[in-house]
Length: 327
Length: 290
Image (cartoon, rainbow over all chains, first blue to last red; front, top):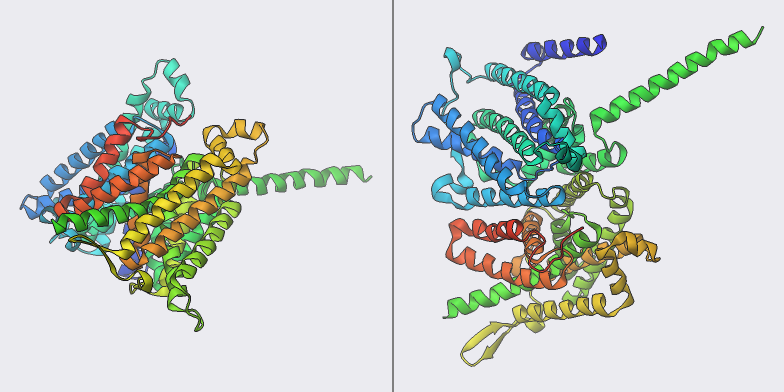
């Protein structure tokens, strides 16, 4: 156990000091992207990992929140108002999603969320008078919480890191809470949970709201990071990418989505600078992960590591036995 | 008047293409319970490969229909390969299936971009169908009529295959109850490969014969996949009649929506699907999945 805490502490220290040892603004920005996409992936993981409800429409929620922020700012509201309005919009949109899609599970849930995501994408793409269509919406400024300007890469990174750590903490609390346990119960044995007197639908609904909140938070960070939002953000590919982050890292684990987010963002931004065919590479990585490590990178690595350790212990246990047998 | 007529002919033509695309999707979904998100890529691959053969490979220029056939067979084999090597390993695991099919579609899209570049490829209409048919004062482009006829013929062919042959009976048994089908000695696993190859081939065929109308461009896969989804969800999975009716309905909604309500075109397209999902989750002609 103490080993795990040491590792977490080292990771935390590395994250806090990142702008000092990471060379170049570019890489600090990549780190910011990883962090807010990790929040997005954590949000989807609530449903896909802990709830067994695979959503292919989360980019729609993400986009709605981002557009809400941009639109409010364009209307001349302050950053605080815009952010609060966007959070409410994101969670409300998730509530509508949930009300419609929680009628079914499994493949039905995938299809309904996909349809909802496509509707939102279609609106963003075509309702030009509201969204600007393919030209998108631009944001002029980043907010200045308590007088700290987030305009440069380092300060934005720290703001993102704080939000990320808070989200991760919220996620840890959620997973250990009775609601989290009940959600995993509805994933594994919905009928038994129902028979035990749990309101399965309501548990899933609350989980959806939590997922929507995390998604909205990440979307606000995203829109302030890029200072631009276009329909591409809502496309099916975007929904797919975040789902890939969750599944490739390891659905239903705390660390998995973060590792997945890092993998996808690094391939999309850093590797794409060196390899022209990064989309091909990304696709190949996902196919390989499913075939070779179906449970995801984090649980898969843990399994391999435990396997290796057990073999080492077994070998160690066998060795002295031989020595004793000799004389 | 002409406006409405053109729109109607275009709608039915597009419906025909959608039927070719979604019949296979529906069978794969119904029989194998696989949400095959590569279906748009298969359509695009078929279009690109067919267009390449039609334009000419190594100086040999193929007749349009032979090119279409070659593309169909190539993509059908690719589909069978993907099923045998990858999807076969993931029975019942929808999350993994979604991941693998999406990964494959990323790879296919990038592959097409690498081989054929970013510029759209236009496919020439076959010379024998380049003209127009006149019916009184009305004028119809021959090629669009041909697509409608091909779609109807394929629909009849598929119907005969499913309803009148031994293979069809086995496929239907597999759709209805795969476990029981296995018990009575049907090789459901082999059926899976056949159905997947058939679906992939049909999608590719739709891609190449749609080429002269839609042209071939990067992103075609992302345009077609949602449409196939809408068709299958409207019509009901595993139902041929459902795919047919769904395709025609979506063909009309899509074309009329684009023409009349351009700002809300996609909303008009996906809203009926949402209604069907909510009110009749098995689709208009589908049976309740077990």
